[in-house]
Image 1 (tube, rainbow, N blue to C red):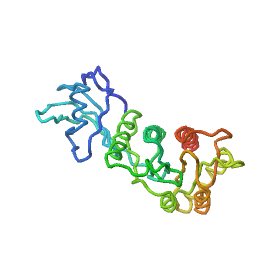
Image 2: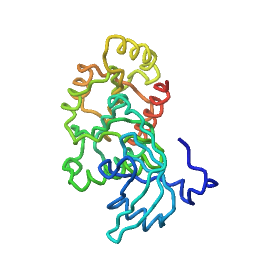
Image 3: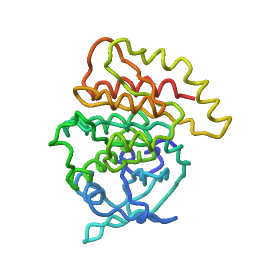
Length: 267
């Protein structure tokens, strides 16, 4: 599923990806509307005959040729080739990410998407600052757009699911993955490396008895977890793990731990 060959007369813009809502997609044609239509027309300067890659965030990819640009802002494209990739297990790699300063949280959203996370659950913790607890609707819509731009950039075909912000208690109670990890700053916490020693065996055993082989990673706020939160997590099957003696910012800890998990889960 590579980029089309310019020599085949497909057009000059085949390295560009455009997100298309599934409802605007048929077997033969794609209609690009709204912000993505505006981006295609005014930023990428699409013209009739130009070729683009189209994705719908649900595993569908197409190579499409622009046919017409309507006065209303729609871009009508004809599909030349398309594929459908099955969706991975939605619980394959889940992140319970404590809400922090919005620009840092959004950076985590972007990097988590690039690192293959399948579901992101924003969580309110005991140490979450009050000003980050009330999430405006527009902010959640912005987060969804960040995920869309991220899958376009990193060439993923499936959007990570973005859950409604939740309390840590609720998020922990709804966890289904067989491997559960809580990043902890407590002294003498086992290293993530040691926690992962039995990682593959745990996943294989889960598969054999029909349980989810997924991994859930809980990442706390600045200031760390409250003691009652760590106790609750351990009672719910989470294993505390440390990334070393240094204290990392939450967004640094997210990227470091997700990169390690992505490596361990590579099959």
